[in-house]
Amino acid sequence: MTDLEFLDHAERLLASIETSCDRLNDDTDADVDNQRVGGMITLTFPNRSQIVVNLQKPLHEVWLAARCGGFHYKFDGDRWMDTKGQGEFWESLSRYASEQAGQELLFGLL
Image 1: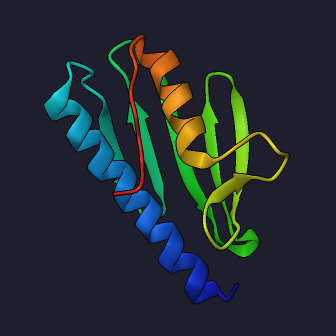
Image 2: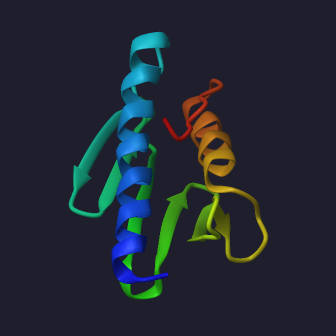
């Protein structure tokens, strides 16, 4: 994958996280704040816990840091998959955000 291809896929991922937060805030009482600075998005929950998603451009990876740990994802041509076999990005983000929010939150590519 070229740098431009990575940035295209990664930008789509970050934009979808922002759109998902907006949708969740409209459809639920989750009140997830999202702040984006360049290639990093910080999700802050009402209990002040956070999830941080940021781009690692030299590695062509997206990193996710949640209460339960840190995870690295690479695009496999179809999906962002954990580099250590821990699953797909959207499933993981939904699971970790749900745990931190105390309610089911479904994130996804829109």
